[in-house]
Image (cartoon, rainbow, N blue to C red):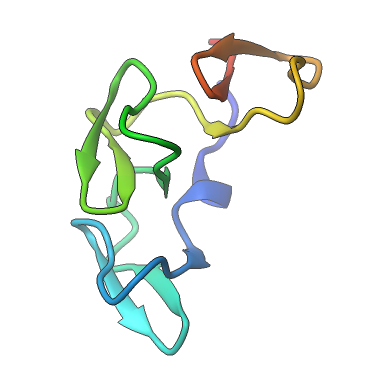
Length: 91
């Protein structure tokens, strides 16, 4: 299984808060610990399956949730499938 570390280190901060498991560092949200669950900016009012809303973010419901990213146009990159407004890594 691929590592999810790329989604758990840091991301752009949206608004004034960070999702649960992350802390503010300037204009970024940084994972509080290595065990922090993957998170991504929320697109619209929903999160992809397996993720829950945390303010302006979607946070993985479990440690091993697949990586998600915003879908661009109508396609997803190789190794991902469409999940609403997101592309989700195939498990």
